[in-house]
Length: 377
Ligand SMILES: *[C@@H]1O[C@H](CO)[C@@H](O)[C@H](O)[C@H]1NC(C)=O
Ligand SMILES: *[C@@H]1O[C@H](CO)[C@@H](O)[C@H](O)[C@H]1NC(C)=O
Image (cartoon, rainbow, N blue to C red; front, side, top):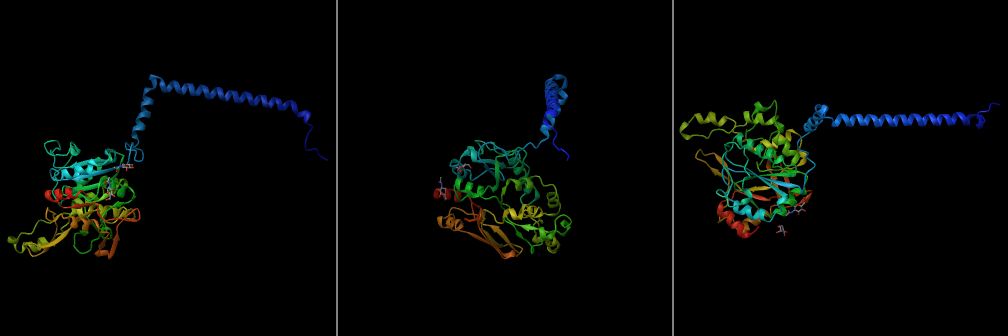
């Protein structure tokens, strides 16, 4: 029989010795660690090694300047006004922002270069010095229009508290109070971008096809409300924008006196960048699942005959006579939009809850907006 367990008495001495050795080694390790830490501390604080500590600072500054998820205070809505010159409806916006919490919004204005918003150009202090200093000259219907939109987004993105980005024109009016609009947009995790298939008008230029395939070509209203991640896609896009700049251009207006030359002119692609850019860019990035594919800004379009006997569409301007309470109520009661090219009915939702479609409306004249102010919507 083999005894597997030796008598304990014979092992008791070496066991004590082993424990002692373990203690010595452990102590040695502790001393070594402390010494190393002291050396490290010396290196870190010693002016001799300033280059290594500045190296650390340098690496830290290499991190993205904007930490998107960390910001002070409330999430904000960036109200971005794209205007020709001044803001003729400033008195209406004054009453709108008066009822807001200043910590819940930011204002940005893109106006013509050199134009300033101060006490001489606006009656509303909310707009003082809110214009971009790097604004450009905008030709309506040209790619400079989308360039200006991108400049607005780039400025607004500098503040990480801005979480929603609304583009507005100088003839836009709010249909609801600040809080209602704030909750409507903040409760949805999606952008609101009018976007539909555009097959018939020939605005798509086949020369774009190597970058933008026809199936990704979209049309829709320029007046969008974007979530932050989409705002970044638009602001920093350097792939689709150059293609638009080159191939999506407005056709020069037809001139009756030129006769047959007009036929050639009519064959040119008549592209309006701002009615395609954001929706096509987001489709190209496969982001349509993150959109409510409709606009929150109402526009009434009418078709009128031009002198060339072609029909063209124009937005109606609401003046004093047409800004009636019934008219405003009719706009606010709209709860769905039908998209003919896709046979799609868009029931208006925010965070899956049925809501009125429109938060803003255009175009309003000064006296139309004055009447609206009286209605205190
Ligand atoms: C804002 O508008 C909503 C909806 O029209 C209304 O229910 C609410 O009472 C208004 N809030 C204020 C502070 O006026
Ligand atoms: C401001 O934002 C806070 C936090 O999101 C919200 O609770 C509050 O209702 C907002 N105030 C207004 C006037 O919209």
